[in-house]
Length: 64
Image (cartoon, rainbow, N blue to C red; front, side):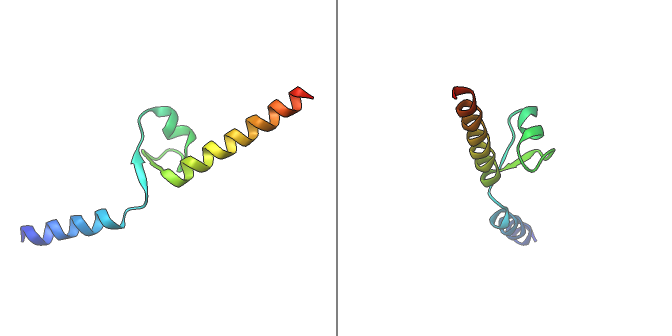
């Protein structure tokens, strides 16, 4: 019986998406999926890219 439970846990672990636990409340609020205690790593990278492009656009506007 224990082997069946261990096999089920292994299957669940293998099918999880690429996520990591959050480290603080800021990540829970501002990184997709919003309000979830796990952060999806591809969404987190996308959030960094969008933030960087936005900041770059603002700096270019202010530079002109």
